[in-house]
Length: 329
Image (cartoon, rainbow, N blue to C red):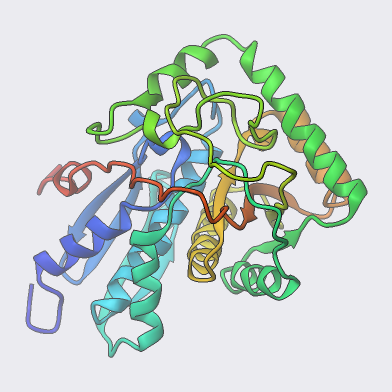
């Protein structure tokens, strides 16, 4: 690369940090190709979980999250990005092309990148401290700033409908062919695994399970100690006007911005895609929570972790060389 372009090691550093992005079952379904002064993001269909995500919505949303993560990482390293989303319809898995220009990072850029390493998906029960409306609006504002709708589901009827969709989706999926095997393949893994959800990040099953989160087996994460009367969680629904690849990609970018903002506020968070993976429950969310006016793409569960909660370990990520395509590939 020339002197007005980032050196390859800088780009590798940004991609290494970006791979901390959340993805369905931590499959990390993305692939990068490097050009002169540009970076290209591709969907990696070999990592699609077809029983859970048959139409690839979760995969594309996951790729949107890593796209936002890499832009945050590059900004902190002094490189602004101009993004061309879905640049070549003839190559549908080419999701984005990023052109890089030199940039003076701000303190906010550096702080946002620091949140990438701090963020965790927390599936444990939350404390009974409420999340303030100001925090919810700040997070929802970040969703809107990234081209999606962010709706805090606070209306009791809407919350009841969403909770019902979550429960119904779990029942449908658990009886679907291939789902249980696929879930077992990608979860309950050893800490050293480069992908999938480690057992150490899955709460051990018990009477204090959270009804909103997906039911994983083989978890070894002990429940927090201390008081157990109730919890306060908020559900933030991310939606888009359409349901094409571009809409899903935008939803993933917005989800990434929301999660990093929540982390900066000290909140615990957990993306929930299960109620949107089944056509019937997705329609239920669209019609009874969104009033039929938008397409739901992801739910984010937010709350305060109990003061007694132990820090969550970081989940493993694939080596950067495994996600960057070799020259000519």
